[in-house]
Length: 426
Ligand code: AMP
Ligand code: MG
Image 1 (tube, rainbow, N blue to C red):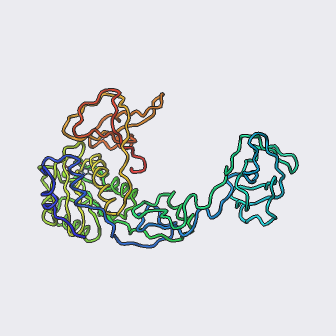
Image 2 (image 1 turned 90 degrees about the vertical axis):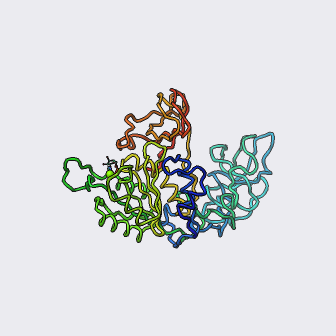
Image 3 (image 1 turned 30 degrees about the vertical axis):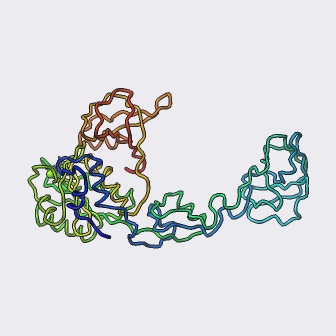
């Protein structure tokens, strides 16, 4: 695959200024830097082991699903032509068609019916099923009230779910639980999926403690590796945890080199702010083709992006909420593309703001919100309170990001705003 240099991408983007980028500009840049991959390595896996993987090829159904016309109900099967339009229909029951085997008795004649169970093959000549609870039964005689049943009711048609030769699933789709089931319904024991994307990450900063280390003044425990790891798990990536790397050029170099060698993408956090007196930025510059950005967004203003060899690199800001927001806004879509995943981006839905929000036009803001249903059934959203970029509890408390777009100004009470529900993403 031909890779464009950062300079080539930048030259093709209108108004590119690394010191003043809007969120849509960043997204447009990343679409070039990490384009959709349809040629990644592929492996064949048993369906049960392929959950959350990305399909590498279209799955064409070798069979009709369901394989026969069959009954959707427990009831009585008969020919629709026996139905009387104006009066109750009386039929004589002459046998019982069970699920799992075809009816082998004599074909029912005019005015006859068969008792049938859900899933049983429709006996030849019969095309309609009436549910038990809808008929009067007297011995072997049933009476169907007039006007309640029509020809073809409660009959599932052969191939109505998926027809033989039809693409049941498309390459690039994620194997969700429903897709697992669908694959199994086709009788396919194995499926071709993409190999997992390998993503290495580490945290930087002399003040960052790993779990188990003794607290000391001025130090904080590393939370970014945990959120990043969790977000990668949710995407079905393979993760390589390179720990906390102190602000020491040799240790940083070793970490970057190991990551570039082992992974398809690297995610670091911390050390990319303006005026940061550390070695992280210098090493990124030295080891890769890297740009340092200031993005018109909150939280998450500084960010470094580039490549080390074939490996894509994201240098996220250090603040814990900024890490999660930049991951969701930029890293996640880029990784999906690298994985060849065609799933639609998260749906933005509208909810009515329960409070006024101050918002400066000219930057994108992501506030943490709690979306709920009002008494009248409308979607509404309130913020979680303190929106500081270090307040990680806001991400736990919230169930959505309120997305206040670049050009948007203050929000009035009751005004509709876009929200991105966390759903399964975080
Ligand atoms: P930086 O981007 O390095 O200037 O860091 C911004 C803020 O985020 C500082 O308060 C850091 O202490 C904090 N921070 C950086 N990395 C981490 C981390 N891995 N876990 C928790 N907080 C962090
Ligand atoms: Mg720092």
